[in-house]
Length: 454
Ligand SMILES: *Cc1c(COP(=O)(O)O)cnc(C)c1O
Image (cartoon, rainbow, N blue to C red; front, top):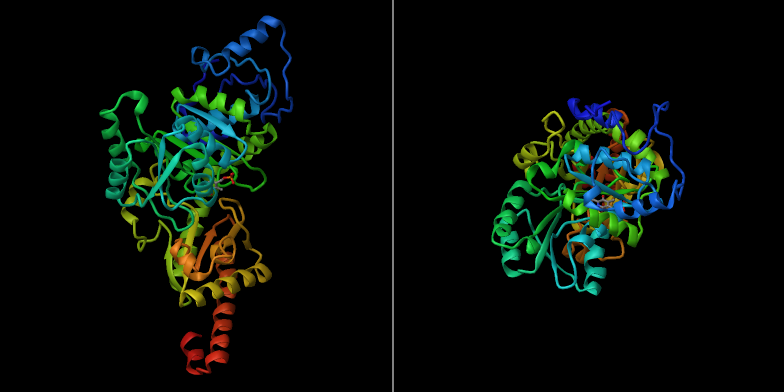
């Protein structure tokens, strides 16, 4: 049988995978079993020798040829099938998976930069990626320079000032406050510089597409070179397992496989299986529901007096609404603004931080459909308040300097009924603003504040 899966719509392909699968011959299974073998039987020493020659060797890097399995850390069938499907979802040539999103990010950068090179990063990125850049890369002799790449002139200035830049790095939408990067414009600028450079000095563009998921945005189709994902979030979708993936041009695949072989950090087949069997096949279904709900919830939040600002790429008030509509498109080309909403509580920085903390505590004790927890992209709605959680040790002034909004709240929408999520938020917001008014009234004895805020 010939593999004709490319005749089908992406949404169906993520459910079925390939018609002919080189990774395993599951004649009778509809669902691939979870593979669980750390080592593989080799029928002869000759076959073993071939396996080692063929591993990560572009000469044998051919889709029709069944791999020779040797050892789980090198290659493995459940993971291989997931990698095929992730490459299809992102429109990429190859995918290599890792144990976590951070393992994928460090591997992607690990194959692209070495001592003396520079990474140019958008300043607003996931906390552990920032920590990797400022705490670990300097020890390896890799410099990281930050800029606000929503402003393309800043990107130009960073690239002009640092000829050693080998990677331009960013997230879009970014964590937590949903800044967007114009991927096509960034890719075009880097491409113009690369035209003047020999291939070994070319700059690669690398985008963490975790917040959008491939359903809402495919950076490779906008000219970006490499995409990384935390599979722990929207792709895994059910919050049961961790994982990461790098989707890259075929020319980087051998190094990514060798990096994974030697640094470890391979995705366990027992963790690849849920993403393959439950996560990717339901990605489109879950994300459509989450996006509809996110728009409803964001619209509700915009109307609430205790809230100063709501950021959601699907709202007309979104500062980069035009870019969102241009860049965030689902498999059918429909606008796909994602499932994360960010909002800021009203009041002075100190008051907003206290309010945020109260809102979290109120949701944690009274709400069923909104759970106080980090992470995102799950079937459950999760909420967190960076200023009183991850960044609580910093005083308010330092939080402001570090770009942490004291009243900023990240709401990662799940698949519950929108009306239940809104009702839970309303109870908590009413409880907190009433509590704030009582608090103000007690402290300042301003009786009219009660009527003004109720
Ligand atoms: C969670 C996350 C990561 C890290 O992924 P892990 O699977 O937790 O290692 C990286 N980038 C973004 C945007 C994330 O949300």
